[in-house]
Length: 408
Image 1 (cartoon, rainbow, N blue to C red):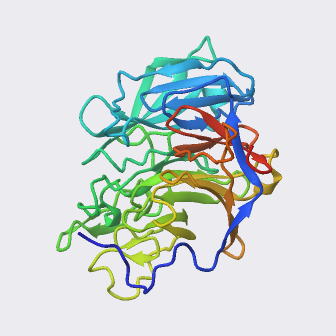
Image 2 (cartoon, rainbow, N blue to C red):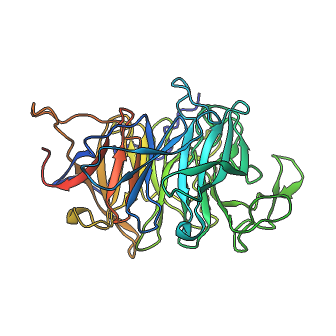
Image 3 (cartoon, rainbow, N blue to C red):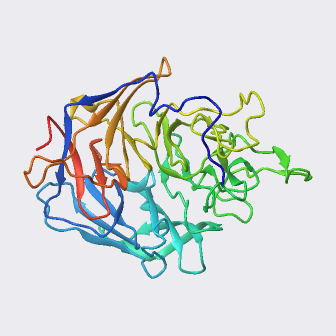
């Protein structure tokens, strides 16, 4: 088995130039009267209604008033019969939800889920809100945009997000198993191991979407294998070399594209993604050589993460959002993220102009039973409301948010 230990000498616990500094920000339960079943996405429709939408992994979207005293979350869409989820294959199911930037006008939203139609089949579909009730979607309106066969049940990725350019970005893992056995991360002829960028407002040829004219790999020819003939790259690809994207987001102010990639052996990483970028997997894990044949000289084409941390700190990154809310001034402009295994939460202070990390702040946990001990919460996903306030979810069903001050 590949060790992934790297060829760069001693292993640091995290970025050697950045100390982990405590920040007087902690978390509290949000919407205390409500619980959900494996809430996997928290988002809003951007339509001025100030509603919050929560996707449950078995295939249900619920909608609620963005009021901390809310006592009811109603079903917006139930498609669990089309979606497959099992606890022993918990990287499948309903994984992604994004509302069209013009949702107020067109009522369109998009989902990413594992289809019950056949084993390990991911679908990206368009749905529409019903004509007579803004709090209920039309279950018969599904239009499949993409069908993505997966070789294994893990590393499905699944984040959907619209960029500032109005195009839909889709985060895909390398297809699963370990070590990227099919070499998908460095293969531009497969959609896996990549971030896709598509135009859902137009259609082309036999596809229910179009390719943006400035996608980076349009017309590019690549080898079909080590000695294969040259074949076209997939023109949906925006960036590649990714193992298992678990969550990605755009900064609402700057448009910077943040992507967290879950590591395998030693390193968890945070990337700032640009068009055409190769982020290294499976040649590298984080900034470190992974493949035994990978240390073959200077690879300036591989883009390092802006930050990484070692498995002595955490073992599965959950990417979040740059905070642009108003309730917690200490977090403004910082990228909030977590580790699923250890339950640790951080806020990364990144200077975009200088392209350097200024600080990595650790955030306090929650002491809900008053015993003086912070609880460890496995953070599944982050999301925002229309005001830019950040929420996160756990498998246990509660939603959480941030507040100034120490844990309470």
